[in-house]
Amino acid sequence: MIDPKYLLTDEQMRDYITRGYLVLKSGLPKSVHEQIYQRTSEVMEKEGNPGNNILPRVPELRQVFDDPNFRGPLTSVLGPGHIMHSHRHCHVNRGPGEGGGVHRDSYWGFQRVRNHRTRWAMLFYYPQDCPEEIGPTGVVPGSQTFAEKESWEPLESILPCVGEAGTAVLVHFDIWHRACPNTLEKTRFMMKFQFTRMSEPTAPTWNNRSAVWPGGNGAGDRHKRMWTNLWNWHRGEPFAAIENPAGSEADALAQLQGEDLKGRMAAAEALGGTAASDKALAALRNALRDEAEPVRLNAAYALAASGAPAVEALVECLDDDLEAARKDAAYGLSALGLDAESALVTACGDGAESRRGYAAFALGEMGAHVGSEAAAVVAGLAMDSSEFVRRNVADALATMTSHADHAVPALTTLIGDESGQVRFDAAYGLAHHGAAAAPATDALVGALGDENRYVRNHSMEALKIIGTPEATSALFDFLETSRWCPITNKETTF
Image (cartoon, rainbow, N blue to C red; front, side, top):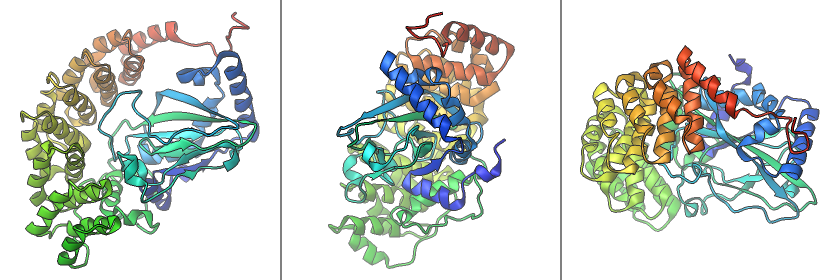
């Protein structure tokens, strides 16, 4: 149990939700970070980059990620029971050099519908002092909800995240970032570790004082409805209604047709809500095809804030000929919540691949709140002909922990899928179900020999969390043959 003094405040949580990152400082002595830097330098020189094996090669890193100064913020954004993912990497920025290109991380080369809600997060840890001259990691504040680089460029620039040894940057998994130029004759290490949520929020997991979105840092003004929805979701209240903002509907309708990006964003924010007119809803539906992603997102969340009257427009958009409109409509349906459940269940049986896939995604974002019928319909898509659909089904069933009777058999089937991504999503999904996934033990044990490393690792996590004697015995058998010795290298083999 983490001491509450290490949890985030409302202001820090607000900044994380809007900006997508927080800079943190370890409470460990500087000597620990110096030791990690030296050990990492030796490993890199003698063996090259160990990739996912950086933790066993530099076991002192365990102290860093056990530091309550880091565990507290991770608990705040990912909830208790979050786990460290098996993918981790030491990023090396040797100087002098130009750094790296701006990007956001893929799922090891695979693709998926990104979660605005925090299901994945990362820590970027520096074992050495990291002033701007040594090429720190730079992040684009607030970019975590944007699929395209061009979406944030008119709004934000890259911010170098600097700090002394022991600094770490907690980021939303989808934030855009890069290695900044290193102008020094010194190597900068950044340890990237990933963490994942394993349960849906039912109450605040930070030092929450305000039931309502606090606002106040400026960044939240651009997407106030989106940030309000995310605040409510983190509090365990994902479907709170949002009233109309004050202002003239006629003025907002006119502004939505204008050339100014920020003006269209503001207009989309202003038009939605519980009292939105039919004319406003139609305009927001059209705005889901706007060329600018920030406008489309505001329109999607404004429609969500309008409640049941917006369901038809959003569901209709799931097979729009514009892929971006389909995706943003799915975000809107996720945010709208249970008023959309019946329509999404119907969409799961549609002939259009996009409608089935995005409907499954939206129901998965609602998680444990959906009913048994919805869970059964999503589970019924486990044998769908479309990999896009099956990927979203595997992710969706992971969150439907109130319906293990439907989810676990379907996820067990999906472990045998021809797609590596579907298989590792299915294994991770079973881990979310904990002891209720015990019937999948044999399938998980078989998956420990999968050719995909993440199928193996996710299956290992699932067996650990299931925790039955059979699961634990199989896990130890696997670990006996796959374990590392942290002090063995080519110079000392025994």
